[in-house]
Length: 109
Length: 116
Image (cartoon, rainbow over all chains, first blue to last red; front, side, top):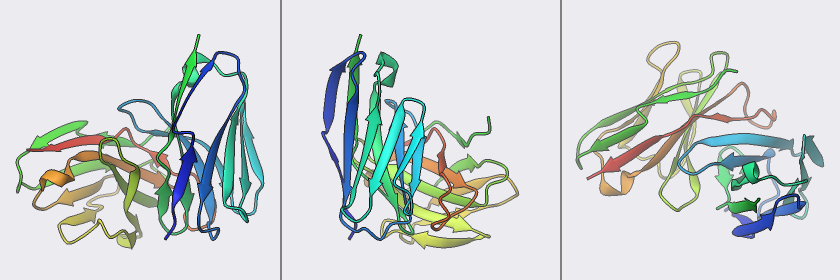
């Protein structure tokens, strides 16, 4: 059974820092992996999608990598801003979508 | 920018009552999904729907749940006889493609269901 784990569960950094969020999954037979952002009480906003054949995707200050064989993905956020404060979820798709519990990020001004 | 919309944003119901949660997916999308998130827990997949039939469902999606696309724009989730443990945020999502073709799923803002 696919298990998705995100470390750390919470992270607090000062504005301007670069940071890395980690996601691991137990079954490497995925079609793709997607990173989402969730603001309190709100829906999910898709940030990046990496297909199983890809190694990384970039969008603005965000860079996501995927190492399917080792069951790992990272989300790199450059020059963090207070507006980046949210919970970041990773999810793997293999017929259905399995989510991690998320990393709650706080960026302090 | 096109977006997925959901109504109502909040619903309170009595245990045993039927509820229908409504979603309007992005207009040119062909695949539709429902997820739920119990407070403080992970987002969980319920069901995916394509071409007027269920394509995948989780063990959560038992006989008390059903989905329907009653017209060309709406996608609904019905819970026949609600239980206390059905209290959660329910998210609808849609995508243009599915199954390894790498298409992003776009989520609605959710319906918060509270069963008393």
